[in-house]
Length: 462
Image (cartoon, rainbow, N blue to C red; front, side, top):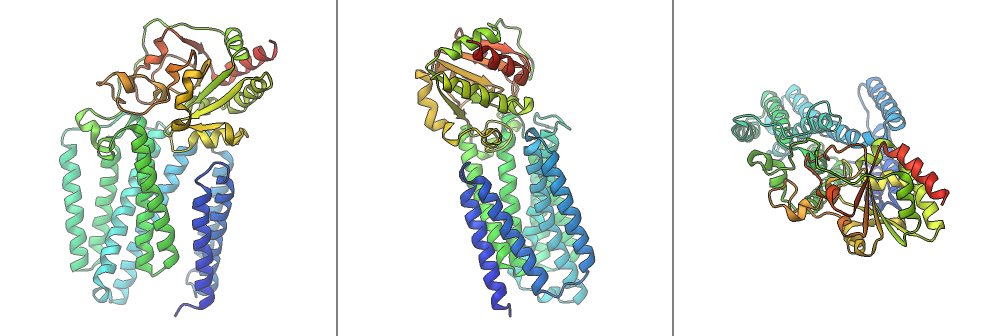
């Protein structure tokens, strides 16, 4: 019988997790939500140490200390541009941990000789945890490698990939059924191996702008595996926390796929028939209009309405603080300035919101795509900083384009467009951006941080 105080403590921790999730729904409350969620995790961990008579306490404490040290160092050293990779890595570790816990439960039951006495549904949950957790672990590692550019970000295809994927999936289901019918450790290990293989095969064909959606999907998988693991362990708090993560990840995946204007199936398997966000990845030699900081300063300084479109290039250059200073100067001159945030800008959901929040940009200046898209027609200048695919008119006008059908920010409807780019290299989707060649578009080449500093000084001197 679980003591009453333990149940109450778990209830408090579960409430903390729910409140934290609600806080994460808005940039204004996200920081507080993170702290509340961390407090809930601390409560849950402390209760386990206080309530249970644990074996191997010293190795557990060493593992906690090492994990805490890695977390602290990672939080301090990881750049904002690397945050998506860190999220993918942490997500994979969560799925792998859930799979290992389920395997260890099988080992413990085997040593007690009581595996055959376990209820059938418990074994179903065990097989599910091992399979989904392993899949999430390996899939997240491949996603990490793509984002870190340890491997190509383009879809990786090979002859027979659909057959390999389908065969591995059927084999995993068959062995999982065997595990439920005839419980033993070896089927669990086989299910884990098949899950690892399927995770790799699932993510390899994904490329370009689809990667943020897969991060969200694998996050949902990890949550589901943790929830199933909570059922196996009889731990209600794990069940609640995993369900929250799984549900939130599922909703976010659907929202991200909708923001891309494509189905989840097309996101995952579109490359097999040439339908993913896959392009040639080569720079164009078509003529464009280039400009300098002084000319752009005049455009911005004497405009009435400016809309800024941030993207991954802004994060790479770490120019968000200089951009905020520029916006502050423009506002002092009476210019109305807003930031247009595309749902899949950057390399993960909410990447731009976090990046700009780090620079202390007021939340009311951050406008989501649906809220601001109709305002571009009234904008004197659309300043695109490091974004690419999310403003590419090919998504609307070119049926053969890999991103065709993806909702984009209507930057091409502004009176003037200033496109800050390092080079003519295509974006993450690997295709040319037709906006670069529009008559009203001026390109300001150079490193975003250096160019932004020159632009800031030029505006100040007006």
